[in-house]
Amino acid sequence: MSWPVDWLALFGRPAPLYLEIGFGGGQFLLEMAAQRPLHDFIGLEISLPSLRKVARKLEKANLPNVRLFQGGAEAFLWALCPPELLSGIYINFPDPWPKAGHHHRRLINPQFLHLVATRLKSGALLEIATDHAEYAAVIHDALSQSPYFASQLAVPFLTQDETRTRTKYELRGLAQGSICHYFKWQRNAYPAPDAFPIPQEAAMPHVVLRTPLTLGEIANRFTPMRVTTETAALKFIELFQSPHEGRLLIDVYINEKPMSQRVGLTVCLRQDEKVVIGLHEVGFPRPTIGVHHAVRALADWLLALHPQSTLLNSNVHQSNET
Image (cartoon, rainbow, N blue to C red):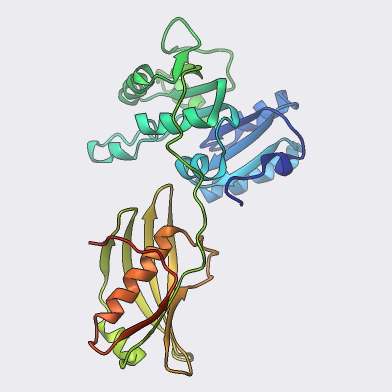
């Protein structure tokens, strides 16, 4: 998908656009779409089995006003949604990550709410439901301290809501005696600085160098390593050598805002004995600045292996590495 997505072209019409983050079994999403045919809906989910299951339900229900996406909420909102796009966001029973060491994985926090505020229209809905009491307290604090949202009600949340569409998880919890917390808030008119610019793709990175080392010697010198730059955390995981071509493939994990990628970097020996480092096309990776930093870090490592290695050409962005 393009950054950002051309939502008008994707749905084929102008209409209020709503997002459900983590649609699970799809009951809430499909019922909302069926009840409001003049509105368009996006379903976002990480689980591929859930995506496949709901895609089949969607085809059977013949609902043209729904599109499904696989991925995380932060990357989706940051990269694919321009400011003031959405008329509402629904977050039903996000994973509470109850262990203290996992709290940083929770979706709802001040920075995420700031991102949400930039992508919502003024007056747009933000509705969150949870049956985890501790997480409900965290959500309450985050919403109350945010300058960008106000409750639609006289109270910060409800513990009963007979008007809403129930999810499968919600019905199961209620049957077991769980107490649900329903937050019905909305975007106010307070300006939210857009600290989340749409990321831009960089040029396809490459480095050309010369080294007296063979590919086999380079492969034998490789060990897993971590590199941190000003914008990305890089983890060089493993190196593979082709038995048929003059090529090495390095498995690299790149964590940068707003997305993470696992990519393959190639080290190729050309007939003119020059070595070219670049990005493999497997998985259709995005050539982001973080990918440029990974190519540069790999080149720097390779150049340091032998004093007679020389850099001939590079189009990668410079980075501060540790």
